Amino acid sequence: MFQRDIQIPTDGEGEIVDLTPEVAGAVRESGMTSGLATVFVGGSTAAVTTIEYEPGVLEDLARALNVIAPREIAYAHDRAWGDGNGRSHVRAALVGPSLSVPFRDGRLLLGTWQQVVLLELDIRAARSRRVTVTLTD
Image (cartoon, rainbow, N blue to C red; front, side, top):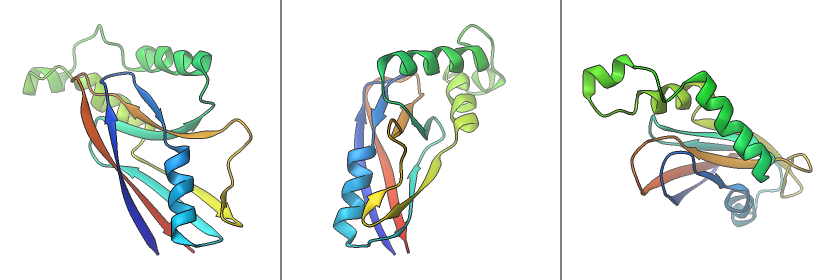
């Protein structure tokens, strides 16, 4: 097993960060040739997934998340805690905090247009997210 933490600075809600270079770098650093890379973000207002990292698709994803968990509605979480990020928690729960990607011959087995991304879903301003990459063979 090999494990590496990556600190990712984010600028706030809606930012999508391409993690593919960092995950591929962890595979290279590990010296492992084949196995499974698990990417996990700690916290309940961020998520990890794959997507084609292209402006149109990124805009489409943001719009879809707003349809699923709109900004304009009341959330019980906000009433309870007053922090206004109920939608952030819902969106993160739906997308999920982790993703597994197989690798072989030291390379991630992603599709041609597929990248691993971090979704910053919290309404707060800039912060740093800890993403943990765990490799198993």
